[in-house]
Image (cartoon, rainbow, N blue to C red; front, top):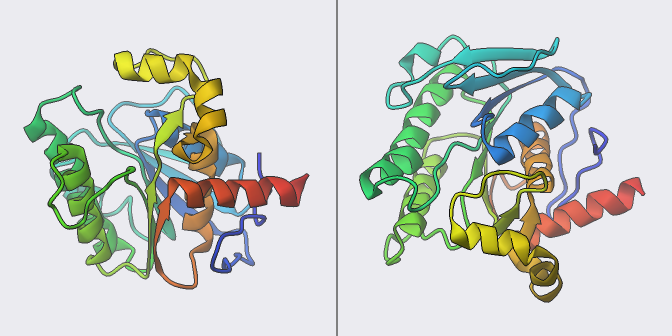
Length: 246
């Protein structure tokens, strides 16, 4: 794992000076969220990690606080759990085709906005890292529903009033560990990953690398406050971290 304060990116990062950061992670039962939680628990700058989950995780750790919450359409019950948080890593989402269009928008947009509403009221100074996606369209003109909905969620977060919002737009996220792929396209991408990575390096990112970058940005923030990180930018961040710790 990457040491706590070795992350770097385009703008200089504000490295925490005390080991007291409180981090909340949404989507810890998913691929990226799971890596984010594990990294946060090992991170020496994290005092506590609150995982907001629909079902209890089969792990325990002195830093871990699990909060089971099944209805993300109404996060009012999370007011106390989200108080005094320093950062949030939001990885909740759904694959296109796995749910109806209405459900995809509800998960992608409505759940994000509702969670952000309660977090902003409980921890107004929290930094927010959001798992968006390649092609996210804030203009709403894209023909692709996923792109429109991610863009809509991005706009809402940028308008929510958080001091720092970082929008991560990965392309293909390589699972790293074996899993049941959601559809044929993902099975094909996984099977051809070595060649795909070689030919199109800026169109892939490892799930664990993406998760670590999201946690580090939530912990440290950026001098510019709001930032969009495309796949190429995320890879550059990860590369600098690996070089600095080699």
